Length: 205
Image (cartoon, rainbow, N blue to C red; front, top):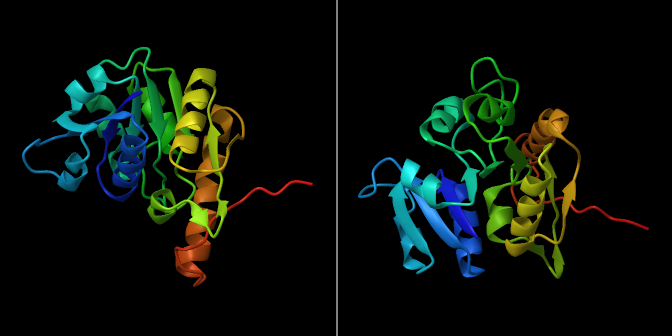
């Protein structure tokens, strides 16, 4: 796939690395192509850097992994996203998010032409994206959204990044639940002293 990554920090960088290693073409969308966070990502030949609109134009899938407070501004900067899949990896944390929205995915829908918006890669830390394994067990990912094609793409990309499974938890009405689940991980890791090296695995019998 051709994947535009908007936000080349910890989360965007970890996923860019995994996906490029898997053979996807990564288009880093940045404001200044000569000076941006994550320049080291260009060491992979499958990764190139572009302006935001150029990256979006060339991509099939767009990952947004910027601070939640910038969600509306970032969504508006993408240009024409008609027919493109947008994966939202952001979270509103401690009330810090786009004005007028309880979650970032609804904000993206309100500020882009794409109807294929899903939320994924937001429920765990970037360290768990860089290394999905705990011993010989890989942790799981989760996805929500009304777009079936968006969810299918996110599920495939989660597996390509090393997650064991990516579970579909429902439609757009579950965006808020996804962010609450993210805060559950943050609470355990940061506020309850468990540390970042924890992850979720769905067990069945």
